[in-house]
Image (cartoon, rainbow, N blue to C red; front, top):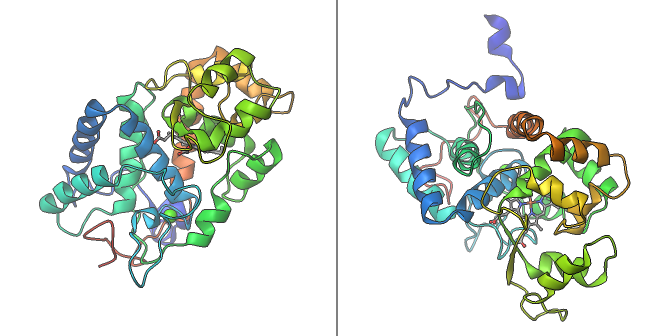
Length: 307
Ligand code: HEM
Ligand SMILES: [Ca+2]
């Protein structure tokens, strides 16, 4: 008994945290996600990415959701987030439903973790038991968002160290990168790759150039699917694309470029169920990055601002 009370960090989270405190919390979140994803499939991708961008900055504490104000600087203007992360209105809607059900009980950080899982499921991917009991930060970090969220220009060694800094292994990094099986990216995130790199399928590069002009400032926000084959299906096509040099980002193609992670990409490309298992386990691990628990932090009433 004493041992479980003394439990450290992520071991304080549990999958039944809201079972008596707010029994309908999880079904309410699931309905909110399903309704948003049925209106726009891409929203599933955007919600998955929100959880990732939360957890890599100060841990999974909903810091990413805090709005900038005259006297508060959040993470939304960080380079990887600005003009890019989305889904805040969906989280607002879910939060207000959960608040009317159980005021002051369910954290924004937990809503992000559950919404990420439900998004993956809604798009045909694996499910997992989300660990719960995270609390919300009263702070955010623009500088950590700029330094710790991986850039699409990173080489394999940079990707490995960005994940290692968060306690995630190279194997987990390759599995989590499979999140790029869904969603869209802006021209500015892949322009250099499609005009200057040689480890890219030439026809793939040419077709992307049509909607992403070479000159910076032209079409910067034009979108392309990250998984060119099935952008609204959570499958293993991302890895199959890498095998034929159709990774959209420089960083994606780094996972299959003659280096140490090629064999894992081959494994996931040929065995989708191993990818799904590894992805689910790595998501649980990512969701355990330095949560606030116990009496740390707070349960925000409005995910965009502290109480
Ligand atoms: C491995 C290092 C990673 C890098 C360098 C990276 C980089 C990026 C970039 C540049 C974009 C496009 C942003 C834009 O152009 O607006 C993007 C989108 C996305 N990323 Fe990643 N990412 C990484 C890992 C992850 C992980 C671990 C996940 C989730 C498990 C993830 C999920 C997504 C999703 C779903 C989108 C599309 C979002 C949407 O359509 O709204 N990424 N990523
Ligand atoms: Ca955070």
